[in-house]
Length: 275
Image (cartoon, rainbow, N blue to C red; front, top):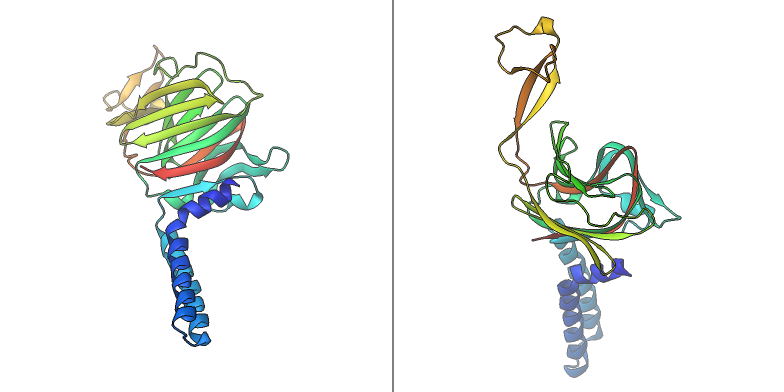
């Protein structure tokens, strides 16, 4: 039902314009005594005009609704791991996907809202936003106790605990329930809202950290000299680490989902709208 509703919303002006052309041709035939062939020709022209308008509109959309309630909804998603339709749950299951899956139709979008329904089956649901590709994106990891923001740069993750960023839940989520999530990405502010029917679980904001993030990679001593830049002693350990900083440039990108190893969740009724 939702699929049909959003189809009509997406193409309402095109359908109305075509209906107006057909209606005009209809009255022209009866009131001006035109040849019947003219009326038939007008119908044919109107039909092809509708197809043309829809084709042009599809190239630039202001929203996408992906029900994820049948196997064919897997089209336009790419990634690695398991993102598949569950006939029993009538939704898509995401698990064993360390890279995640992202929707290909809005890779160049910047400010947008996302809404979807979800059910955590085990541990977490990772929600991806501003994904340039599978190695660079923001991830909001929804757990039973709160939301842990992640930033993935060149394949490396920087994460924050939900207690440290004010994204803890007052009441734990249940593994038995479906919830609805709303996320707004507006410049460097991400607003997150989760509801259980009419009960509000969380309604908070998280600001994307700008500048650079540092990632530490272990390097063998033989490869480093004492005067090498970026060398640190971590927690008194004699092993040396090289700190590499990467700039954050997550100003645009698509949405998606990620659950690594045994993490497992269900998602459906995904709506993406430009702000």
